[in-house]
Image (cartoon, rainbow, N blue to C red; front, side, top):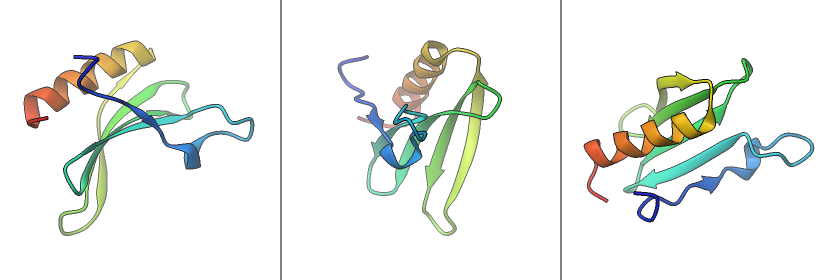
Length: 82
């Protein structure tokens, strides 16, 4: 699974010191899955679409990045052909 999904750091959302706070994976032309380090020191797995109105939906929140990544990759593989 790790070989199929390559996460990209979303540079615009890094902190002042350059530490990454958001990683993204593009699905098709308009959909993305993000893992975002939130203000509660947890990790949100988010899905965004730009069909109709653009929106971002939090799918689930985790205490650890590794758990968020596993969930996100499983969710992508279950919902999209990559």
